[in-house]
Image 1 (cartoon, rainbow, N blue to C red):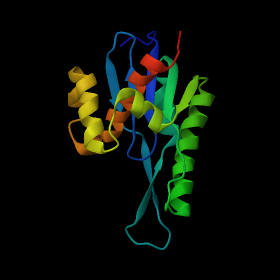
Image 2: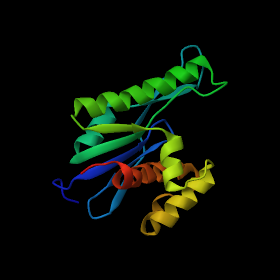
Image 3: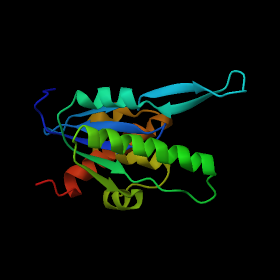
Image 4: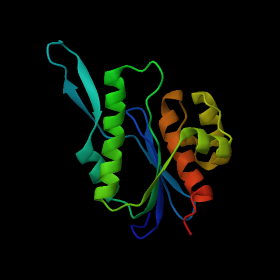
Length: 166
């Protein structure tokens, strides 16, 4: 694809999320978030995964991004303190990289984009809906574990349809 193409980026943030690059001609590329592993002190053979800021910046710099749409993160009921912190940290990394690269972005609540795109809450439903709306690209999210890139593609499509980019 052309570096000059104006690309809409959809982001399902988080370690199991994804990034979808939607070109002006409707083509889509997907990527999984770059991750690094940190050894957990005092725990043998235990690693903690994190979003890799340098890797994310390097990845996003390759594209001519017109606008990014990112699913807004919030604390969930009964979610632990450290889990909430890690979710917020990952989300902040995405926002910081977008701002640093001067990419305009819109935060969108899952409830809003899923309602507009008629996407069920469950992972299988999201995969199915992404395949219905973008059948040419269903091979990009064949498994349940690919839910993050499917949702990112749906978020990018939402941005194209509802994001007021004119």
